[in-house]
Amino acid sequence: MHKEHGDKAWDMPPFRRVQDSGIRWGLGSDATAVTTSNPFYTLGFAVTGKMVGGKKVNRQSITREEALIAHTRSNAFIVFQEANLGSIQNGKYADLLVLDRDYLKVPADRIKDIKPLMTMVGGKIVYEAKK
Image (cartoon, rainbow, N blue to C red; front, top):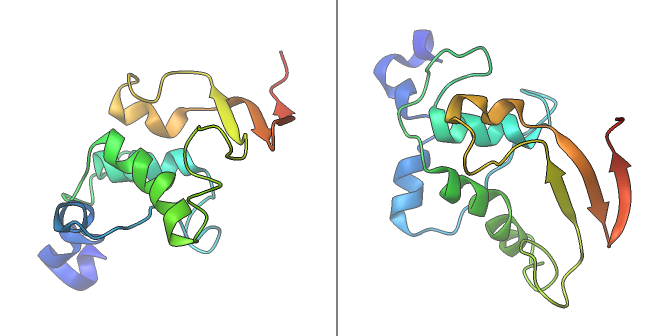
């Protein structure tokens, strides 16, 4: 990107500009065409502007809270499922993760390394890490 587009590449994608615009937007990936489907890679990139290998390629980073909202509540809104998905509330599907570290406290460069310990879908455990 940087070789082809020069300085413009530092703002692709323009996370900060879009976030500050007030537009409702979502965060995800077009996995597996470009990257893995691991959401922590996407969250880490949005927060740090760094690729998985650690090279900084984007200066349009956002806070980890903004990235989490874009990846959960905003995505639910975009697919017209905000009444069912995107936040933990009575009446919504019980889809959630238990993580091996605190997303809000782990150093930003380590967000990409977060692993699920347990996954629940519809209130049922569908994945548990081996102990």
